[in-house]
Amino acid sequence: MYSRAEVQTFQNVLKPLCDAGAIPQELYNVALQAVNDRLKAQVPDKPKREILITRQQAAEMLGCCTRTVDRLRKEGKLAAVQYGTASIRFRESDIISLQQGQSEEGRTA
Image (cartoon, rainbow, N blue to C red; front, side, top):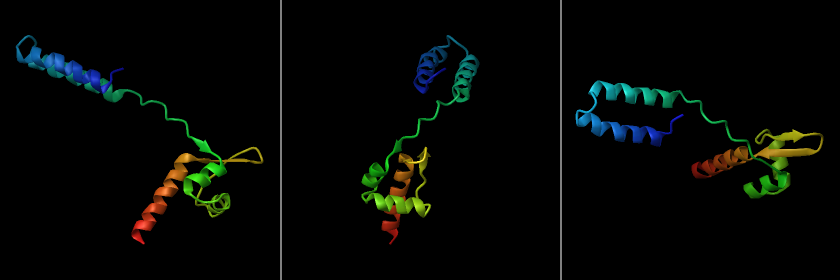
């Protein structure tokens, strides 16, 4: 597996050799293309785990009370992840999205 920096280093090493005539231009192009193709074909990293937060943490992030968080959930504006019968968590990314939506509404109003 190659990183973008390694590909750049590869190019920085081969280009002067090509310019000096030590390796043919065609070989340089083929080698660079092969390295770039391999970089593009790499499997992306596993997605990061979703951060789950409590009702209280969600309320603190939104700057509201826990009853407002409950209302947002009941209105379908905020999805919840339920564990068992009593434990509810919220995705931090959903809270951030909701915050961004609220700030955009504030700008347009």
